[in-house]
Picture 1 (cartoon, rainbow over the protein chains, first blue to last red):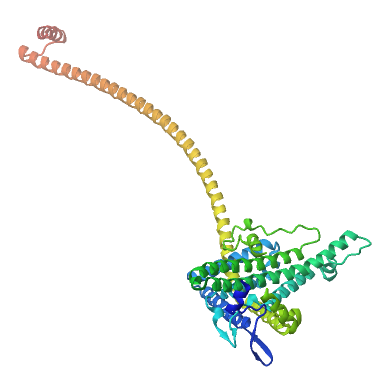
Picture 2 (picture 1 turned 180 degrees about the vertical axis):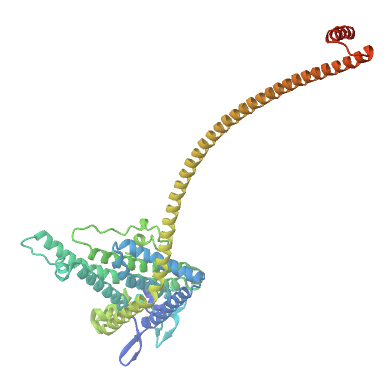
Length: 282
Length: 178
């Protein structure tokens, strides 16, 4: 089968390919689709914000408002402190909506067939490790910032480093917490990258395997990819909130797990998808 | 497997494991900065508009709920007050009816007594007047009779008689007349 793929000339690359450089800075195919995604993202939100400001509503505005309200209520329910929740919300909401748009853009039919210098011009930004690592780093840094604000610098360090002679179990726990922070971040970014990359490869392989019948088979896989995109964006969003919630929690305190069934005002379709989402491709 | 070994070889030849995964430090920093700017822009100019609307709606819902609860409480109070007032009104009405009946009975009795007294007084006055009229008629008749007797006597006798004759004549005349 692998030989068959090789004969068909499928081009699969883990990293985004550089199309050209501007002043030594590489412009990759992921960056191109990311820029398009950014334009779409800003267009949608600026349009809806403008309409809301003018007091004009239509179905699209209602849909975006509904989605936004659902995600905001999820933020409020996961982070108990409302002030902190409202500070975290911009980052979490931007991650969700931008990742969702970037992911969904990769499902557009025929996107991979547009090439330049032998490389596809468009590649999902979420299938570029640079992007997933970037939002992971921002998230983890913000988590630490909120933790320092809550516990103080030494209080936050104390979460990880404890005197092994006084509290050997606590010291070990702190060491595990430190490893946990790193692994959480890595899994956060690699999960999104892996899912998006695998989705693109899956669509490519299905197209090759089914050949002319791909016109009938691909829509199902595309719909599946749209669903996975929604799930992954929500997973990244909700996990970033949970990490923040864990970090700002007082030592030994109880951190509420994201009880998705207890979000009565969250009517977003992604509200109950966190658990199956993790299981889909892990 | 060819694909994977191909990836590994490419990575090893170019920029190591990071290069094989497509990680570029310059690109990473660029993406971090770009995403921070995006988050800042959205947090500053876009999301507050959404949040303001949501908060306003939430406040309106909360205010509506509070108003509904308050209205419900006031309705219950008003209902209790109405029941109390109705009870009081019924009691007052019963008392008024009883008093009115008593007063009406008393007024009727008083009117009856007054009418009876007045009728008795009128009858008594009528009887007294009748007696007076009878006496007056008798007296008048007596006087007229006397005058007639005197006239008749004068005509019959034609002369003045003594008191003794007069008395005898008169007596006989009266006797005859009667």
